[in-house]
Length: 218
Image (cartoon, rainbow, N blue to C red; front, side, top):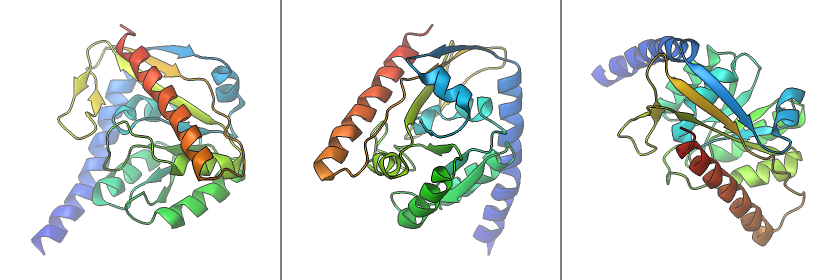
């Protein structure tokens, strides 16, 4: 019973506090934006793509892309519920599932939503890692939906890295930040297992290079 009460309190307070913290951090900081290739064209078009970013680098993209009706895949765990409630306050919708629980159901729902023209979002190394390892499900989603993947990450002049598995990145108010969009990745349809791995490696490399650029941004 005590555990249930604790969970209810966490689910009530944490999303509200996280939303407030994000408002303070986002609205008091200066953000420089860098685009690669056709990323600005795809971004400005406002639909027909799928955002991908690492779990630990979700915070600034979530704030910048708020209130665009983006549909994000979020895990069914308790921490996923807190994330879901937080981002719903920022105008996102969610489907619930991950590589460890409810993934097939969430994949089918997100596929239908993205095919309908809604922007999708997946954190491809979540919900439990390994950190910065892109799982193949995102390649299958992009292939079947025939929507490009749009990598995104950010840099902070003086980042704060939490001691979590994903080294979750925060920053102080009044910070200088850099938001970086990678080259869109157009995944072909009807991939076999070997081709899925080939495109998984391409997307993995793209995100890795984006992180190297973020590390050198300041």
